[in-house]
Length: 345
Image (cartoon, rainbow, N blue to C red; front, side):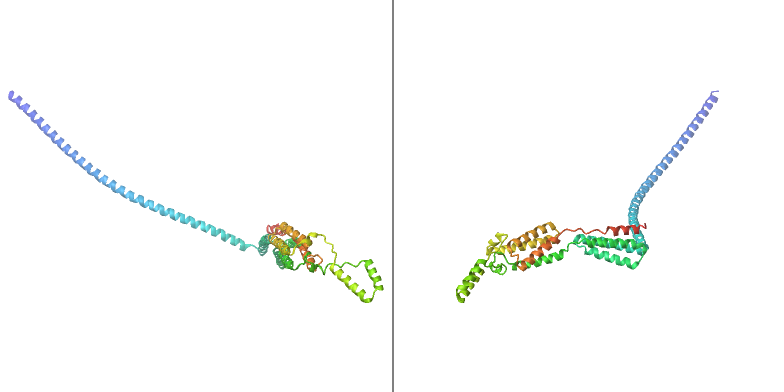
């Protein structure tokens, strides 16, 4: 019985050992498989990490390329926008040109007349002369007369109305007044002064012999020989030439010393030159003041009975009467008629 029991126990031990060996073998196999899987995973991770690095590098390269491409696209877009703007401008200009070409002949004529009038207004404002405006209105009337269009008759009537108004304004001719002042300035050196006796001798009237003296000389002549009577008459004639009585309104004119005559003439010239410069500058108030002073000097210090003094004084008086500010009328009627006809009303 013991033998049998020991044999049974040995079988269980052998079976247990075999089972343990099998379990150990299975554990070894499982551990080996696990290790292999871990190695495989590690290799996969390394490979994937390498792939990620490669992809990151490629991504950086692609980002740089994308940035470069974006810059190129922005530059091209700016260029396209500039070309679009240029094309738009050209299109606008072409449209304006087409509209200008599409206008009728009458509209072109009206536009030209209006532009010419505005230029003439500027020239008139600069020069102070109505001649540019008068000439432009005449040319406009001639152009409208050649067309002979009923539609333009209203404009032509307005042109005639403005032309009459401008002509009636009587604008001061500065050029003519300047020339006349130059002539007066040239005469100043030859004008005789009241204080120059040799120039007053011819102009001053001789004092007539008193009636009593004539009568007495006549009576005396009856009692004396003819020779003595002739001598007496000759002496009386000399007395008449030596003594003359002249009425002078401004006594200070006779008190001008010979050395002061040159300064008096130069002062008169300066007054006239200042008046001329004031006229050219269109300062009519200053010109009138200088002309009044020049006229006063001519009346006070110069021999007014002399022909040259009278002529110079009359010239200064006429220049003073004409040197006035006159506003040139604007051609408002013509401009309004052009605007009305262009609007089609």
